[in-house]
Length: 334
Image 1 (cartoon, helix red, strand yellow):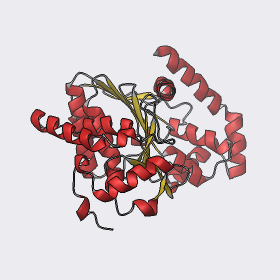
Image 2 (tube, rainbow, N blue to C red; image 1 turned 180 degrees about the horizontal axis):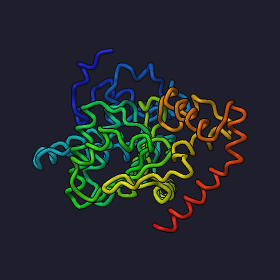
Image 3 (cartoon, rainbow, N blue to C red; image 1 turned 180 degrees about the vertical axis):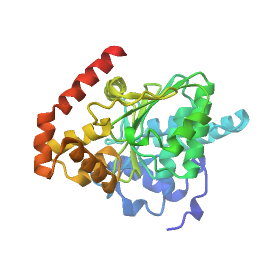
């Protein structure tokens, strides 16, 4: 599929797009195959994937799509006004179509974003208008250099407007050179904490918009503007934040109890739950070999000679009870 014929702005919708979009509004959906000749409809957010059946695309109501497209224009004031006029003119006949399956402008929406480029573009646009706060949970740090530069620029711009940034990572990233260097480059109100385990990626902007992945490889994302869901995400973040250990700007030392490190206690907890080495490694953000090294050290500390005996000794040692007591004391100190 080529996109050369679709190098146009949203105010100049191609004829193929103008033919397919009204039909999608009337019928409530169109197939991915039908939309292949008009990728502009997806690029401009007029069609979005069905998260439950990726063969279908659903139309976004013109009343919802139009303001979003207008927000995307960040050019000079004169160009902005000209573009708004052309865009409103292009949408005028579409606004009269009453699509039975399209969300209304008054309904808080959950939008599906398809493709890493569009996901990053929408996040960048949303952050450009933010002024208060960015809350993020980052389970991994596998981004490429280009995306790192882009995120640094938008984070610094947000900090320059007086906002604050709070981020959660896993303990395995506490000493990652890339992560540490990132926060040394940023200037402003920043705090970073870590946990043994975190949720999937979460971005909350000004407690008004959230972004979460919608598939395993993160090529789909949900843009959430529903107030109830945003409140739920914020509460979840704040509870994890209270349990987490400070990493930046001042790092707290992870306590060792009776020769057992915090990472080994986390592994012990997962072992007694019956998790495999691979599952433990995945949940704690490390490779299987590293997980097995920690398990071997834990076994040596407790004097275990077999995996079955290790589980018994973990229970008898009381190290998991010590972990819970330490967590309670940590919470009381904050």
